[in-house]
Length: 405
Image 1 (cartoon, rainbow, N blue to C red):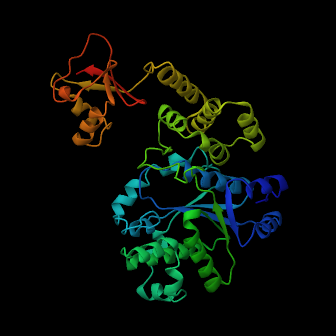
Image 2: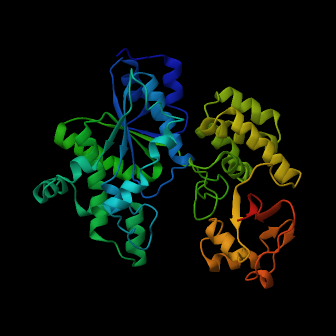
Image 3: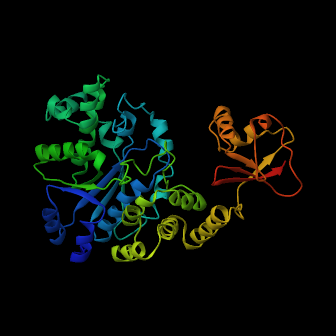
């Protein structure tokens, strides 16, 4: 396959959404300009069913490599997910998943990334691999031989491990093996480049060490930027904080979640999660108010995953719902019986995680029926529906049309 060595495309690839390139950008630029076909991969552990915009940044870069003619691998960490990378766990090991958990989590992933990676391309198809294929077949002797390439001191240099040790919190032995397993992925696939977020740098460097020692081969480590609020340092894509934008969101939900992002996040989200040219991004930011720029951002991202018409409708619904404070024209329907209560609706529709959560939301004034706030006194009472359309609203973005069974 002919490799595209266009200087402008290579320069953008090495400068946009890039935190660091190891050993250095110039060596990678030379490799890309040489016409040599490189093998690049990014791995993600299926610890949940949904991918978010932070993942999408990496997949968009992977697609740029593919368009240049290079071999790209979408690696599903179906074995490593069962062990659990302790990246965001400061006090204890992540719950170990079963094989069934992992299989269920990854079911919709390919559909989620299809809008940003041409997984069906026939000329240069994306390879989809699973690390269970090689990690599950390693013998205990194999693992010991791999482990002999590192010292305990090297492993516990990882920042999060140091924090655990200093604070007297547990550091489980199997967690030290995670970098070893991710490192072996590079060896098994014989890659030239590994893409990783900043939180995976330690693991990616372990792979660089193993590839050099076992195959006498140098691997580039391509570290992408992490989506973080530039003022607070908090992750933009946080499910626990309610700030995540997930790829399986419906159009209205995705548009609204982007509009809920802080103004200071707009620039990076434009750069890291859209296909817009950098010059066009600067023009938008320079000529628009933060609110208008955010609307354009929400439209562009929603268009990628749902298409132009649904993105346009989502924009209209947002204006109607939030700026004009009206209910959207279209909303999910929920059937209710004469015995149904607000608690039942919130829990069964998924708007609340439990009855206790539903009660808390109502106590905080977050639920309305036909524009009137529901009070705690009415929680356990059957609904008194009016003739015509009945609309239940939770917070600012969630609406249900209640219909009799």
